[in-house]
Image 1 (cartoon, rainbow, N blue to C red):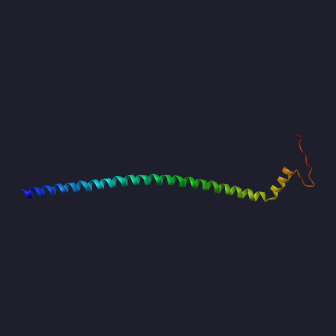
Image 2: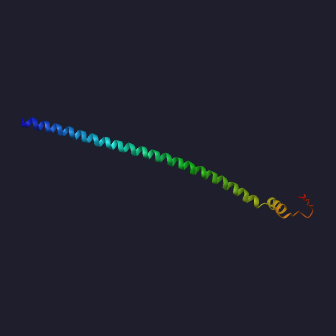
Image 3: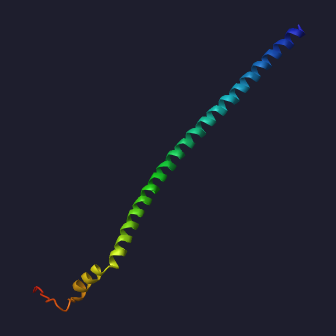
Length: 102
């Protein structure tokens, strides 16, 4: 009878060990699943941020090109003549300035 009892206890201990290991494995699987989901969300956020930054970079590059074009234009004789006429009211010696009355 002692032998049957030891065998029953051993079977019970084995079942308990199996249940414990199964519980631990399932818990780890759940934790890993949650962590993977969290990492995926962060990855999506970072990708969105990256796209936003790339769009801003493109916009700033375009703005830089326009400013460079304007800088070059400002250094031309055409611009200087235009500003002299517009802001200072100057004319070439062989020109006649006609101003409209306001």
